[in-house]
Image (cartoon, rainbow, N blue to C red):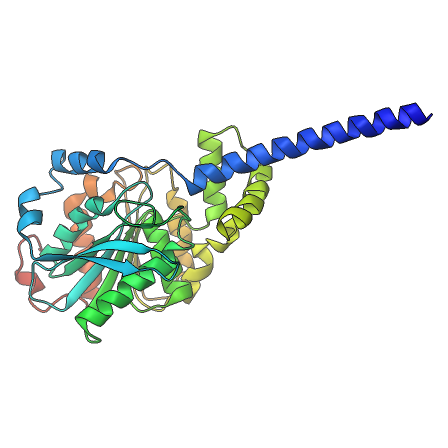
Length: 321
């Protein structure tokens, strides 16, 4: 009998050890996919934007601009560029998506220039020239954005009009900032945000890994808490959007299968007035502007005009109907 018990205990120990090892492997795989998501090379982004004629090197080299380092409350520095082609106190902070960098934001800076705004483009933590070890999909990025907005407010003055334009993760970051950190901007434009990161992560895992169940999410939460200090449920724009008082324009493309347009529809329904929404028929993920450039700009112009946020001479500028 004693030998049988010993064999049972040994077998149980082996199974437990194997299960723990498998769980650890799954947890590490899931969190590595999130924390260290593969970024696009900076030069690839630059060449893509130049080839698509969305980045004008001549304009960028000649425009009045200043590069700045912004100290994050999370303990690293963010690289920002203040672009001031105009004599105005209207500014917009442009927040790019995961795997991109500030060069992807220049196309929006040019659009806002036509609308009468100067802009700030910056790199999220771990992206472009910014410091930071991991990507947190909005958890730490929301306070980074707050630091950029505070820096701009100190520069531009209390009477300046300051907006935020975010794309994908940058859009979710904007909503998380506005609803839980500080609603200090005058307006927000959220282009293809996710409404809940837990649901989005499960969608990503199902698309790109063999991890297809809620078990992976539970493991990811345990490992994320230990490795990066937060859990997925803390990254939920659907919880923060209900507290945003400033105007928000929600944008999404119906063809987007990476972040589903239903998430933007949900956020729009949850957000109290004032708010607007535009769903484009054409365009994949984060492609609404690229595929619908004129309509996109007119949508933004109409939104800003509706809430009295356009500069007084904006209607005289080229590109605005």
